Length: 306
Image (cartoon, rainbow, N blue to C red; front, side):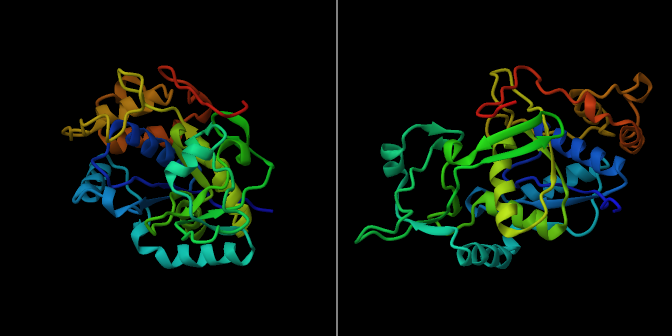
């Protein structure tokens, strides 16, 4: 049976300008998709309107273009995919996997047995139905007491028991917005994405997304998680804790070289000042996935069995 062509993607959130951590994800996903002769798609994850910064999307696109990271096809905007999320949620409800939850965050904090990967683990209070007088706030999916196993392209075999790590997680929030976990699965499936390359800060989301793919009957992509870029304080560089945006150089080669070197790629000295197109051509031909480090400056992966 022939292999399906690789379809990769880069999915930034327009909550601020591109920072170096995002650039590392963009470069890694671009090189791995192009090296396989595949396509590289772009999706703007503007799912949460209150967090979207006006003009940020245009600035991100300009930075990618300046650095020679050109995408294939039309840009997908999550804010325009609501109908697809509604349909996916309806399919899950028809399977009896979704239930209404009336619990506030404060109630969950008080009732949760112990903290999980991203806060308190929901104890299933509303699984059997809402108590009299309670109004639904969010929609959750029933998580079985089963282990989700997968092989990451950098971190190797991993497994997680969702019921113990996160519990029944939210698909639609109390404010009516769809949760990231559902949206990204629906978007990847709709675009035919079969290679997801992103930062290791999203490693803990992968078991939930694999579970949702299985529930929806959509193909599960291959996952490659890249080491996180940490600041001087040891925290992940993000738009919130690193206000410095990527400054446009005359050619952008320094930023690309730094991103490639961060990913363990041995960039020839003669290419360190080359134009982005030349540098990326070399990177696509020579990118070595095995050379990507699992830890840079103290990266820690919690709540997984390695």
